[in-house]
Length: 125
Image 1 (cartoon, rainbow, N blue to C red):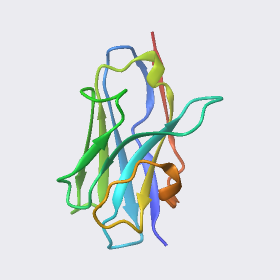
Image 2: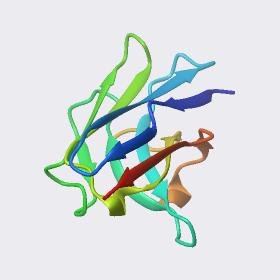
Image 3: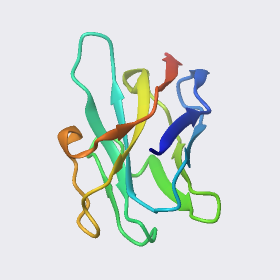
Image 4: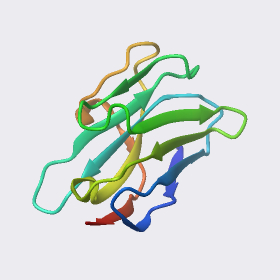
């Protein structure tokens, strides 16, 4: 069973940047991988996802142009570069693997069945 471990979260000021990492261990498979976030009292929402080969990506409208998802398959690690952070980006960020889609990037959390423990991102305005 694979394990996903997020890192890189923390407190920042509005306008600053953070880079999150998601390390996937316990498997040699390369999954379509997504980032989701959940703020207090809100549902978990899609942020970004990347295909197994890194060529295809998908972003939520709220982060387009500010966030960039990428991956290094030699390390089985997926990254989320977050620039121009806003207070409303404050949330726990989770990475997740879609183990059953080979090419189609899906944006619903229900399609992702392997999750990390999350990393907190707090943006002060």
